[in-house]
Image 1 (tube, rainbow, N blue to C red):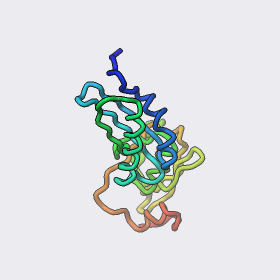
Image 2 (cartoon, one colour):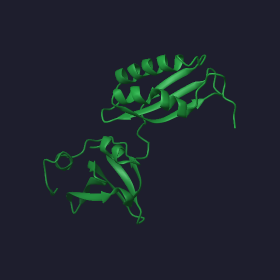
Image 3 (cartoon, rainbow, N blue to C red):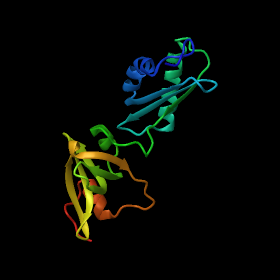
Length: 175
């Protein structure tokens, strides 16, 4: 077990200290890392919410977190408040809900994979718009049937027909 410098909180203490303030602002604390090997030590707080973390929101959360951490007499540290990033695996319903409209690659428990665009996530299921027979269809997947899921980086816009299904404006459509 590594010794933590005097005053530097554990990740669990950071969550306990900041959780209510982040929740009031509409964000969940997804992860906390305290790196006491760097100089100065670094505290990284990963926040996510139904509203994407803007630069202004990150700055405000950072000011709040800094004031609360300073009240612990932590000494010198570097604080970073950030969003999870594109490569974060989607593991909970709220992750899928927050990625609505994004293209995702999922590995299913039956060893198959599927790539599509998230239309919705609620009540333990994810609705995905996938290509099929030259068009687009909406398919439903139960969360327990999804082994892994990761948002895909895209360099082109989705088709109007695909987006119509994502937004609920369409039904099964052809090419």
